[in-house]
Length: 330
View 1 (cartoon, helix red, strand yellow):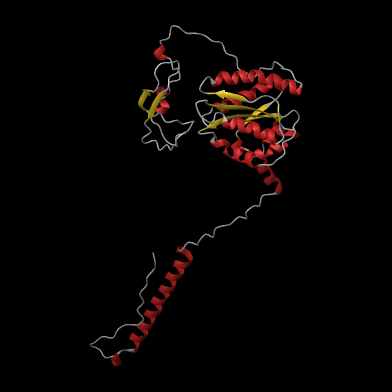
View 2 (cartoon, rainbow, N blue to C red):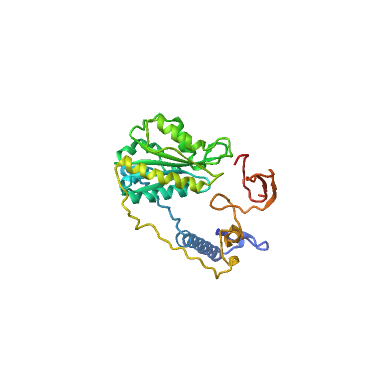
């Protein structure tokens, strides 16, 4: 704390003794006392300022390093799928617009398929790359761009494909020399069936790109998996014919499985994909999305149509407390 010193210079005179009666010895004594007290004060102040008070540390400021041109270019290249393809020796890029993960899964499978035909593929989230680099895809020999595009809501792109959709809609880039194919994921019960897949397929052609295989239209109201498999089985022969390559039969990196049926295990002891039985969902925590879904209880389940092969159900889900936002058509 602060040092407070009270200094009394001299001594007070006694009321009973007039100042004129003070002896010279007393005056000398009082003067020596003053000098002694003054010396103590000086000593204390010196000790306080030079020994007790810590010297304030002056922070050292390092000079900010300005990124060099090479470093800046390297950062920019991280968003370039063209640079990544060149460095890793890949010639097929499969973009996906996915909301629930199905289109992403299809894109990964197509990228892995490429190895069977002596090619190398990569799946890519258009949100993570500069899609305007499509104009440079022809720089890579036997290159191909594939799009697995899901339609979300009322004919809208998925969240991760919104920027790609905006760019493709507004750009006047020349894509001549670019080879492409599109597989769309949709549902025929919606008015704008596969709107995103149809848009990408049409717009790529308008910009000068060359379609090497017909547009695939997967229908989730039927069997989306079968639609994809049927399209894929015809897609790869068309790719091989266009580029003049043959299947290498190289499936060394593809896992092989043997199906074994265990009839001695009780069915109730086998996990068959029921999300409610996963321990991770016992204590759910927001935020909720496609990878962390909210297990909402069904508050109403009512059949709307009578007779016929199709069953049209009205379902109501209780999302109280989930903080999930939605709009009609989601």
